[in-house]
Amino acid sequence: MRFDVITLFPEMFQAARLGVTGKALEGEQASLQLWNPRDYTEDNHRTVDDRPYGGGPGMVMKVVPLKAALQQAKDAAPDSRVIYLTPQGQRFDQKAAREMAQRSGIIMLAGRYEGIDERLVDCCVDEEWSIGDYVLSGGELAAMVIMDAITRLLPGVLGHAESAEQDSYMNGLLDFPQYTRPDELNGRDVPAVLLSGDHAAIGRWRLQQALGRTWLRRPDLLEQRELSDEEERLLEEFIRTHQGASASS
Ligand code: 6GU
Image 1 (cartoon, protein in one colour):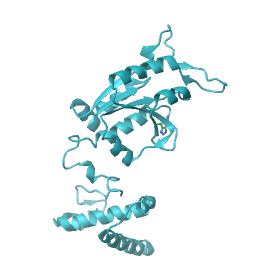
Image 2: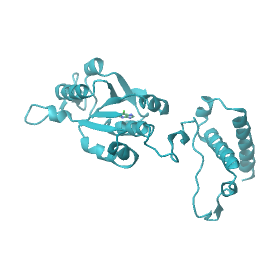
Image 3: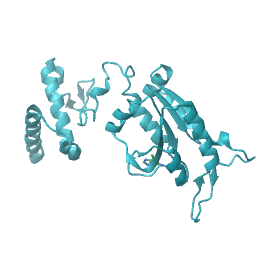
Image 4: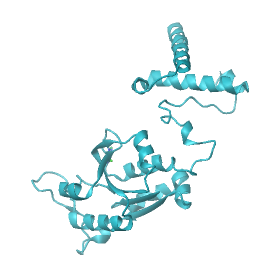
């Protein structure tokens, strides 16, 4: 999949060269092209911001260099839709990541300052996305979040063992807890079932933990998800033992 990003801070994307996204960029699963509006300025100061009509604090991204950078990206990636990253956008989630992972590419526009001219949104932006209800100083981190979430879903990026299908949210539940050596830590043992070698029992225990944690921490996720009879039974048992445990403590 092809990623193009319009950004005043291309250096930030060095971070994407690490880890899972880095591997995908080294291989043929993903590519990243950066387009800096500053390279499309024509004044001596290479100005990339401008004053907002109507006054007020802050600046807006200057239209001409931004539009030129965006046009170059569109010419280079004619099949990609343009995504503007802004707190005013639709909330990005795992469902959106799965949908975007089917595309051949996306062009992400990382806003800085107070944003971009609305007429540029109207003419040249296909979608607006946000990564959550808080304000970042620019769209770059959001672009990297979206790139990471998509890239790990691309075929051949994750190994079999770490497969994305096993992740939290892929099945609409939070992840079960993990344990590694030593088998006793600060007086606390690893749950015995994990040492039993009984893979069916381990699978049931993990599903029960995933259901229980989701019930405790993110009940909203359970409301959006149908439970099988087996899952209902495991969750009921979790709730019973959980209530027993919290009543006695
Ligand atoms: Cl996409 N951009 C900015 N600047 N802040 C955000 C965001 C995006 N998503 C959440 N906060």
